[in-house]
Image 1 (tube, rainbow over the protein chains, first blue to last red):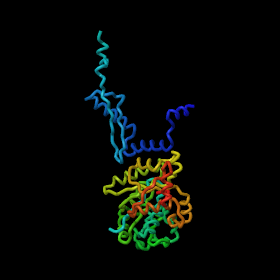
Image 2 (image 1 turned 60 degrees about the vertical axis):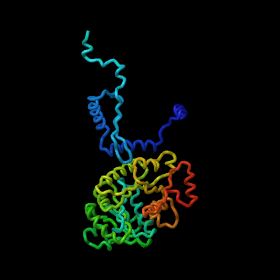
Image 3 (image 1 turned 90 degrees about the vertical axis):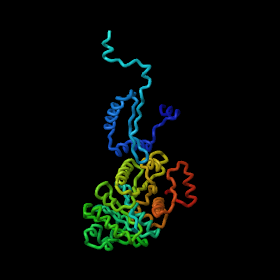
Image 4 (image 1 turned 30 degrees about the vertical axis):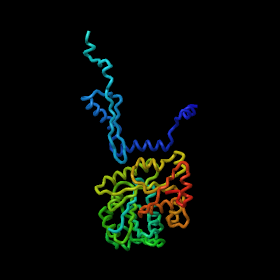
Length: 100
Length: 270
């Protein structure tokens, strides 16, 4: 029944060829750059630290990934800036807590 | 400079390098080219049996390199076509018996007298591959529409592109099953091209006749009757000689193009 509904709203399981294509793309990013997902995550952490020295950013939405275009690999970073900070109360600090 | 040296390689074993080398060599010879194919898989020679020339070997590549015979003496002539020779690999030695410099020197000796020198590379990315790559003017990478073969092809292409001298690389996709592609259960030619992003030289469909031909030691392209894989190899050979033979997609969904192609006498495959 679920699959029938899924089909009705246009969702279906990917074919095995589609799975193969997506898995290959992912594994080749690692093969070509010699950068494991674990290293990439650590690098992302460090890059965020550097950016935070200069900009307020929405860390939860940062996406840093390797992308293939033709036979070249690009490091692509999407780093959204924190723009609604004017409307947000300033983050509470220990000092605030200590105030009477 | 004379002959072009074309190395046929794949990274992964079992994708059809030797069969492709044999069939391309025969096709090119039937197109009136003077062809030598060199089996660079020292210790695991196979091009001789696939071509059906195993009983006529006297000397081999290592004998030439080590000076036990002249190059001419080691070359086995295929009498079924005008100008085709095989330089067999040694079977009892290991691949370190030959160096990349030896391969360059050897092909340089052959260049003057031939149009095309095809080198059947061993699988892998080490010594044997390095030997096969050293004298190459061009490389044909063979893959199957399968994750492991495509991944290894990518690795090989990366290694060739990392060479100091620029070597043109093109891709042959072998053993495509159009029916499985249509069902969504096999990577399509477009999928593989999107992933590997290099020039497509041709596509060869899966064909049971291939096994039968290697059982007999008669490359498909020598047979009188037409076969899908044989036609595909012949088309690829014609492209190698510079002829403009259009690619016809094997995995057209509607099949209209394929029927049209057949109507106009071109093969189902490319």
